[in-house]
Length: 376
Image (cartoon, rainbow, N blue to C red; front, side, top):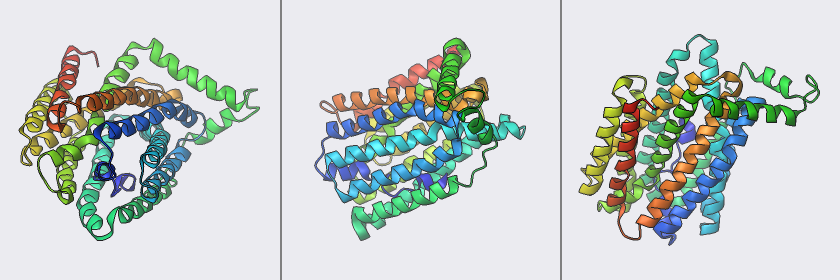
């Protein structure tokens, strides 16, 4: 959804943390709090979506996130930032598996499941376009009204996102709620929840193609959490602080391009990942504003590959536990993201953003090898 990502705080919130006096290690610890909350809530929220209503979770997610952003500006401090990230992580978890499952279910019922990758890619492109627009507006709004103005605008757009989510159709919701209702076939709501959880976990445990697709998608998605440090990479090129949103605009343009191209040329996935890794390393080590074009291209390739991986996963799971398996992927991705944040925090004691981003090319190359070997 456009308004879910049209958040003016996105391009500059790491700069806000730096201005408040936080070190790179403290910022990484905040990202760890974010990821820990998200993966702790990911699987339970997916089971809820499969058991009761996917649409209700899609509505609740932006509301919870909005509360976290408001807290950042009302009381800017490490504890407030940590609490805000906890709310943001919970909001993301409520949406992630539910939205993917709801979209695939709707397409499948319409006989168009084969177009899921294209739809998911277009949705990703719309979201990143929203980030692009937010990046373009963040600088002027920051200059005119400071971080409070950014927070007010961000909360307002998330409220709109919740209202739009309320309008989504959910053809299977009535059946799920009826099956989970106390007394339905002698099964309580808790028993229904546990049954769906067991079904989803069993599908991952016993079906090798699902397990491989989940691991590959989770690794790609977890590595993409590196984008949280892109504003710091932009600052390291020597641009002024108000110009950071403009550099971020370049990165989001690359991400949007990857989304629009999703569903095409998937046989070249291994080669594309290897090229993306090379661009990431070269652009990061160059350390100039112009070289950020290479980094933007790399993140475009990574977005394209993530969509392809998510589509393969959806093709291999059953609808009964679709959101549960999708959330299990999100859970695993958050574990991988924690590793990224931890490595960045440790590495920041010896190296700047450029070398740290270049080092991230190595796991992308390993994923390219895995893709070529057909393990995804």
